[in-house]
Amino acid sequence: MTVTVRPVTAADEAQWRARWEKYNIFYKRTVPENVTANTWKRFLDDKVPSYAAVAVDDSKPDGDNIIGFVTFLPHMFTGSIEDQVYLGDLYVDDEARNGGAGRKLIEYVYDWARQHDIYSVYWHTQHFNHRAQLLYTKVADKTDFVQYGKMIKK
Amino acid sequence: MTVTVRPVTAADEAQWRARWEKYNIFYKRTVPENVTANTWKRFLDDKVPSYAAVAVDDSKPDGDNIIGFVTFLPHMFTGSIEDQVYLGDLYVDDEARNGGAGRKLIEYVYDWARQHDIYSVYWHTQHFNHRAQLLYTKVADKTDFVQYGKMIKK
Amino acid sequence: MTVTVRPVTAADEAQWRARWEKYNIFYKRTVPENVTANTWKRFLDDKVPSYAAVAVDDSKPDGDNIIGFVTFLPHMFTGSIEDQVYLGDLYVDDEARNGGAGRKLIEYVYDWARQHDIYSVYWHTQHFNHRAQLLYTKVADKTDFVQYGKMIKK
Amino acid sequence: MTVTVRPVTAADEAQWRARWEKYNIFYKRTVPENVTANTWKRFLDDKVPSYAAVAVDDSKPDGDNIIGFVTFLPHMFTGSIEDQVYLGDLYVDDEARNGGAGRKLIEYVYDWARQHDIYSVYWHTQHFNHRAQLLYTKVADKTDFVQYGKMIKK
Image (cartoon, rainbow over all chains, first blue to last red; front, side, top):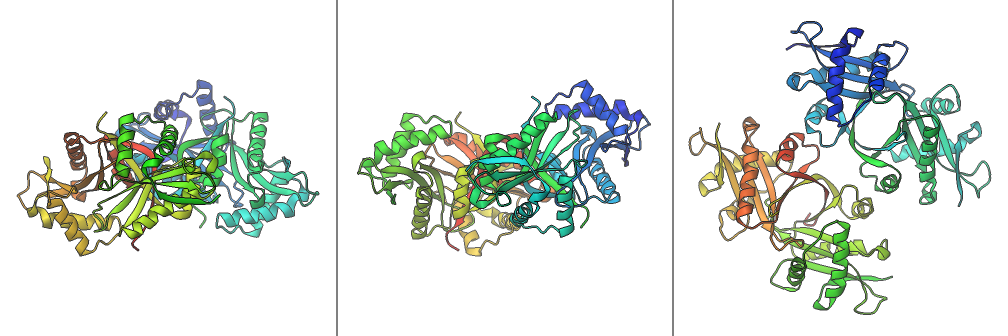
């Protein structure tokens, strides 16, 4: 299997949505349709700094070859003049695991970051998600930080 | 001691810088002068969505009454239409600890978030920073997430 | 407040039981009476290597002066000829916190360990018990280890 | 590959020592020869409650078929009349990973525990050992506990 990573295009919507839904199931959360539609629109809007890329299995036909995706966005950081990039979501199909797609999606974000003068890339994962962390320990550093959160809208 | 939290103003620069320096020492990092100057300028620029507020000891005279600060910035989130707020930095003077300033700084961010239709507020702390976490467990939820990072510029 | 730590004696039973009960409430567990009775008996039996010591507030009268306790037991270790000591339980009355009793109870175990040719002393705490860890970081090292468990009897 | 788990015997010494050495390298520690000799002797002594079992690849000849080992020991617990079992060491050859040997070694300890009226089995692993934890999450529960330790002899 050869895997290529490229930015999403409008034609990818159905394939992206199918994976976004599985990603949400993994995190046991429900995302309303208007949020998904808005998020998708933002990826395609050049004026909005919210990005998505997809991993494509080159052996499959167009329209049925997406096996994963990543989303990311730059934001300011008080400790640097350059922005940081927040890698928000990462998903690879169950049947495509261990084929290098996850690593290539992360490296795509690194490349984008290098080209856009980014200070650092960061993301989160649940401390008990060992399958993901087997990959993350190879391509990044686990920091000493844990996350606190407070819902405002609910 | 009565503590009030308010947005930073240009007159606070020296007091803020003194605490920013101590905050950087706590994290064993050096922030170049041009970064600090740029970060300060952004707080004061209404067109830049990077914010800072200070905790003021009301019993002390103007110009010598700041005892802590918080910084925060909103950014997009793929799981909501509303932005999330990233609370980036929080500092309270050693001699002002346990006087409620930390909690008031966090609650100031919550209030700002409510007024700006924010989805959630989140931040990070080192897993071994137990003094900070004694406060955080009272005002927020510890999530299951740990952080991975990759320096791009160095 | 002057605090002294000494081995338990038969006369301490009521005072120890009152604290043991609060300790179990803290951990949201119920310990059957026959277990408590057996555990207490073991502490007093010189032939059983399960030990307990109590922290005593010297300003209070005998019979009403215990403010905390520790239990510990040595066991073999494959990485040393000498035994390790497992510090199993540690409790200090809420109203006696921050008076040095917790530290003295731990140091009592260290002293016992030195006198009995022990390799190391270890214990566990919940990762979110920040109040306890503020003390532990002063007297010991947090290891990289987390604990897995499997109930056999239930 | 069919894997069987059985108690160690005197004839296993060379094979066990080879794996014990790799296990120590994994943990970046040096165990003196007199400690290894003593630990081995204890496994074979029926009067000493320190146990070891080995995983055997049934397709290989006797004397060259051990692919992993586990050690364990029962000790008292203040919260039960029955002992707990501390599973101290677990090792599987790199080339035998994902063949079920690790799980069978743990289940051997569970069986021993059931036959000896044990309350629970517990062990530790480094929080960043994700390969091990992919197995542990299938056969046991990760507790909320982290470990503190204090060297006494050094």
